[in-house]
Length: 248
Image (tube, helix red, strand yellow):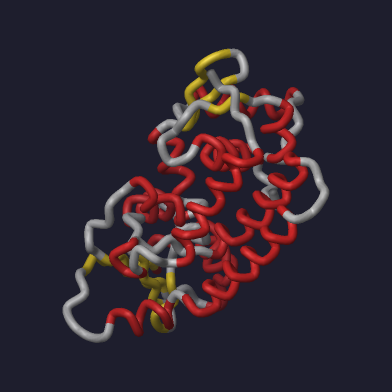
């Protein structure tokens, strides 16, 4: 899957198999295999913590379901998933931080924490996103040294060529090429003689790579035919072809 953190790996796996309707998922050997998980004491401990924290709901001994709270957390790691369920409020979030070079470690830490927020670099030290992340930012920096260097705003687009801005800031041309390459690899994977689970594991691995790159722009900004949306439809078709959930 290309994800080190077991909590994130588990929740993304549950979302990819359960879908945006939060269907229950059976932690069967097949699910563990395609999610690159081993059902050992460490993973069992992480699962217990996720249930206690309200991020997952345990339905049965090996059946789990993503919660709204878990989905909100996942949105800050993979912003693409947010607007599969939620509607955009039409507002932009603008984040600015001017952190001196002498405190570069603070800047690097802040960037790492905000990496999955769907931010696009507008100008030097200015970032924009359609995602409602202001409260996430407030919680992230509140009481910390970097708080003094951060400013955040909520705004609406007044005038100017929005499409040009979006395509440049969020590098949509590069993202489109990335998805096209992944579609080609999916075709090669599906045409191979591998088992269904081997195929699906490889498909998931390729998809996770794309989801890490996709800023998750809403349909209002990219249109209903955006290749990222098409990728979700295609992935679900592949999943239906290769995988049996048996969650009950």
